[in-house]
Length: 272
Image (cartoon, rainbow, N blue to C red; front, side):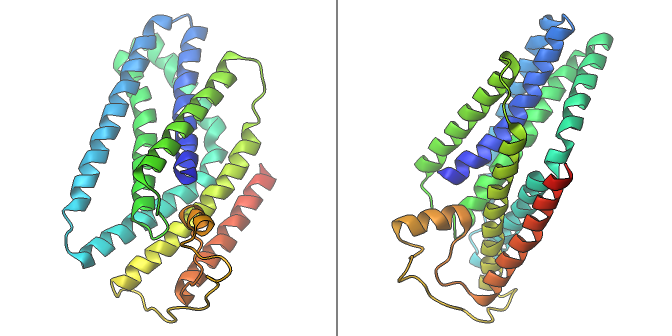
């Protein structure tokens, strides 16, 4: 539940923030009559996101061969790891540029009467975040560490969207200062940890498909201390990729990823 909450919180915050900035800027330009085109774009973006989710699931279900299914799952997990890492470390450095670009685009479209552009602007903001959310949920579902029920995932996702909508409303409708920099900093760290677990699962899938060697199937076993299939262990497994009896290659990949990208995460925020 917490993993799905965190993902939709981040994705929802970016989508709602961009759409909210567009609406606020239209108000600043005394062009509220164009708000409906922003809403139309949001609606179309949501519909297309749902359609992509359905098509994506249908395509995945066609892979009945276990070998090819492992290839597909490993590909999804690795792609999701790359996108999550990019979102956690580099995308926030572009946040201010995104806001100013959004305002510039809205101003230009209003002055030129480009109504289709307003629709497309909000559609793209929603569709991009929607596609990323679908990708991340699929990766969590297919990973060894994604052992959460559909109901829990749905509750977490809805809660994440609700909180992100509230944060954007608070920013745009009140004078309260929301500490977004600190918020993004620590949620980015959690996302890096989630991505490390997904990458470790991708290694497991590739080992099952005999693409990568197993090397040492079980490096150690601490299940007597904290079993990854117990109540708390399952929570850590689903969110952080915890494994009480990891293989050597999985542990090396996980630790290498964590060391590398926590270094970049820390250096990026020191330079910001």
